[in-house]
Image (cartoon, rainbow over all chains, first blue to last red):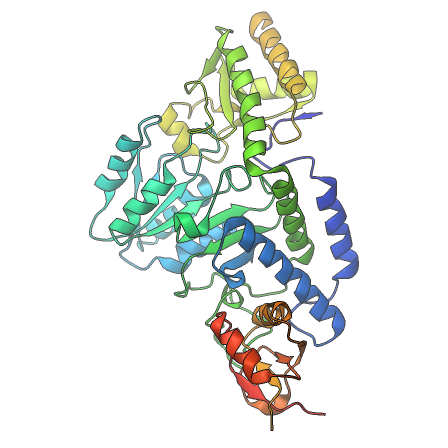
Length: 383
Length: 74
């Protein structure tokens, strides 16, 4: 199989991640933060050590600024539902994933909030910033913005949008599902209020684990309430992090796995990984550009304005048909359709047909790209 | 009495406190908080047998939430 669906989840996982999950299942089978016995303390130590790894990687202020969640969607829901109050207004970009759109829509449907979609103008950061600026009103509380489109790879000027948000006294939440591990995220330098990450994509951890990184000490309303092992005599959730947002038994194999994933990324270097994947994407783009039957939706991707994701279509064919052909004929795994991002497809005019999305990983090769180009050329010329 | 136990609100703070004290050259041990303390801790505290006052100062300076001190029950 040639796996090019790494924007959905990276595969394969590094051997070090698999080994660490296996080790965690064997060594840390006790409940951390609950018992006083050595096994419980040892599990708690493993969790804390991973918090430190995450903190150092993203330059967070403290270990307690790192919240383990079940995934990026859980993190985004925690921020959205833990922050917004009746009457609040939110601004999002035209490239948001349903993990942002749906919780906001849910709150809007219940008459709690309203939101505005600010159009992103690829290649014109000023126009993008103006769209966000023009959407601010007296009820605006927060801007939520993806770091890069999970469909088209287009990067947003998130540092500047964050600064804009702060200049209006607004909160800024970064959806880093697609970027963590590939693009630089510095909680100290960039001063994002909240960053939400998937563990199983560019951080090469397992599914079922995500991160919420906090740059604020004021208290979010927890999405779930329950046992934390702390303040047990009190019926309300603890008023300190991470306990406030981590009720229930933690996913220790997932936590150890994401720690190993981050160590793997650190050993390769995020920049090197990004450069490698972008080289493959550019190679693909140039080859596809020579085929008049291939439709591309952006200018040639470059490392400063794009994440390593490429969408295309073949004239006269449904995106799902193309992906099925690549899978059956060549064992190439890629994702077609709407990629849970209808707003992005609507904005780019691909809502009806969707697109075929190619997303390489650190393990993808030039040979993989050549086989894909060959397959696409054959399909487009003979069908 | 020296009150050698430093009480913290969560197991994360207990781990963080131990990590800070290890780096600062203090001996410390994570253990369960005695029931007699009446302080709403996480159930874990740090036993610091020597220079406990200095250890507490370092922890507070490092941003660790310290809930109080207690005697060790033997």
